[in-house]
Image 1 (cartoon, helix red, strand yellow):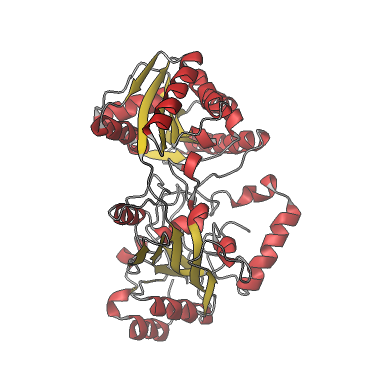
Image 2: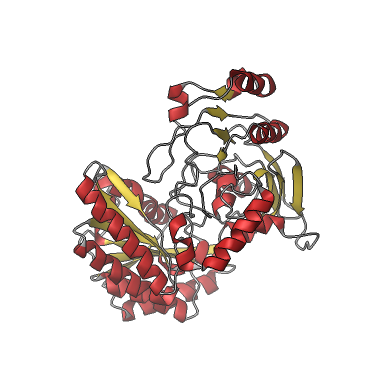
Length: 462
């Protein structure tokens, strides 16, 4: 695995010595992401420090026929930032991490793609504004990656996901030429909606340079609560009933008993370890009276569905502990076995009870430990399989169960991925959810924008 020394020298001349990495120890750091896939080491890693140098790096790689994988923090769970093996390049956005503007009058932020999600959220909150998308990885993940995979989060039920906040962008095409799309205005129909095309494209169509993101005024009041259920089916039915009652919580999250016990062992928050499942719920809005009314309706629905206890947070500290419990579900489960396989098959909200039951049945049939948590309010559950990849027989059962999860989700009129993306891990399933004509149509778009097929080759559409 090598590239011509002359090309490496050219990279160093253009980008600087400290922005080009070719040593094995450095390359190995970028050979994988958060998905459970084989490592694939690139030949070179480039870390441009300005947007202009980003464009030059893209153009240089393309002219040299180097496959290109753009990487932020590598937190995605689908293999979307696992590079092509051999003579390929990883381009990092970590140095492109400036918040260029927070506009309080027109409610937008202008950012570089390497800005960490939570950093933007805190910066706009300090100015009395609100950026709602909050993926579980928000303390690490970057906004470029959020756009590339259309990241969701806990607040997706009411506030939507990344696509609902992308107003425009600048990007580099395969040759390193700058392309502009969208606007700082609320309305813009100039040209094609290229920002929409780039959203969730997983680095296969272009390389983001700057992003324009919509901001909101923050809600004036909120209430958070925890509802306890003896059986997970009752909790799942409560989710469907809350939405059917025309109540739209800010957040409506689900955790089964394995998750509850893992989090409590890890963080000692005071969760009910004997519960079959819990719902973590927050309602918010413009007035305390309206929020109180919604909270009371949620309590009534949960009680009707069999909740044995409903705990409402009495102060900000208790509210913070409720969401600490949910955000620690994955790290807590990850402590239990050497390998965690986290999926995100998504179904219509009314089918959440069926999906939860199907996952439990699959776990039993394949003799696997599985914890289930997720954004039940928008049908996005995260079955998390606990295993050891070093055990071939066990991991074969894991792969069979993952296939079963996807099959079930599609049979319930759901989708392969609500927020993790397709990447390498789910590309083979794309035709199953869509059809052959859809895949071929997508390939033609990709061929037009990337004639050599070098932009994140092998991902999403194959």
